[in-house]
Length: 286
Length: 324
Image (cartoon, rainbow over all chains, first blue to last red; front, side):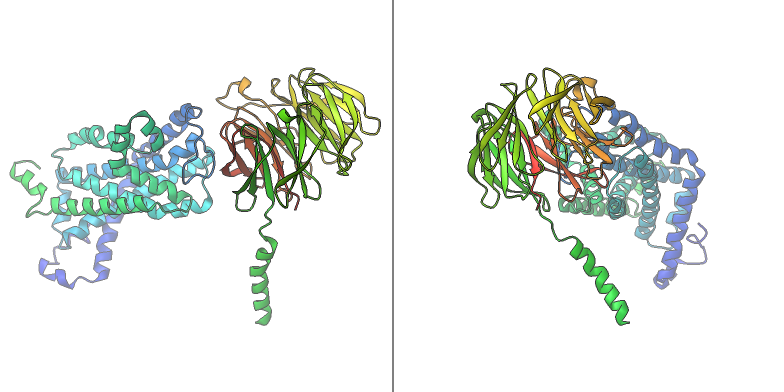
């Protein structure tokens, strides 16, 4: 943290920052996020337990109900465990994105946020660095999950594990940026439960993570439309196709667009001159 | 340097040479819509659909790959299709309701199971005439022939027996009791054993060809499936005799069995009501017909993973692959 809050660098010096300084700043934020993650072993375990419970218990129960159907990118019949895996990767990214939003609220309450935001680096850079740090951590979680799933017999083509990396990164950025945007709107740490109920669960359930969309459409056309409006659906599909070396262009476009919108939104929200944060501060809360 | 270049060229060229797209045609009989679907084994795409007689089930190809034989069960005939033109060029007098058959290793005789008449009919393929009619048990179905062509095995669904028939005398020499509703008989490539699947019994009986008695019984168990859903039908054994594949009907899976230890090693998920199986000539792929989901699944035999499912006609029943 000392790297990015060096009081010796006055705002006037901003123009003179080279790439190296930016990288030092990025490294600082990444290392802090990484250390924080490593120090919270429970967080690592809980981030793994959640999807594994779904895989071991939920998917096992639905194995016969939803066993067979061929939809792209699958070329043949797959077990429900295989179908649900990209959705569970998305779930890790979603929870992790929201968790980093929690950490933003925590930072704000503890005063660390102020330290970060008074850094002479541009605000957008600080926020994007924070986002990158969060995404890096969540991608590690996803791979740890996939490693365990491999031994459970959930296997994709080996190349798929590499090809999902960009998809995970993009999806992670989108969900992290959404979390960041939301964090600017939460007044206190306790409100995170609200995020769980009003954002995480609806996003997760009203998507293609658990059931193929054609099946959702059979059950309820309205729910199908909601699923199609849910950016999380596209994040999951992007990862699902990437597993089999394919690019789902619609998903890619949607995820890119939402990533851009959410990041822009977060940058505006955290801009002291016009953002939502300042408004809250005026209201006497922070 | 030149040597290196040569080596490099060889490394690049060899795999290309080694994998000339050996496109073998796969022929699938579709019981419900009276057609045979032709699928290219390399591209795994449907090439053509041939109209045939009513209720096509058993299907096999001559050893030179020129003629295809299809049991048109409800037309009481075996139809002959020229594989170069994909047209019906003749028929064989199979007797009533032919269901499954087997071609002798010399390619001269076709042994047909007549389900309704409790007979096995031996047909001279060249002369298109019946050589012999062998009375067997009730509802004969499964047909297997030893690699030397001397012994033929027929299974009768209701009698629950495997009948060993001497092909020179056309007489039953031994009867071996197996489990309920035996569907299919398959000899090991070395002729030492016959594997007989029992649909209702849910087992595969391994019969020693010398002793003519059941030496092993293979059972199947799939997590989350009721045992009555596991109904073994088609059986195929690899050319080296080390591995067997068993189609498990409504269990929607093909079992991979170690043919030396008789242990089930794996269950491969395929389409619904998997019925018959066929290897490609190189043995690298096995194809299953999935009756209720109207498709066939290509399985890689090296990894035992399903590769692709291809939609064919309605109620695909039998499958055979051209040898060339």
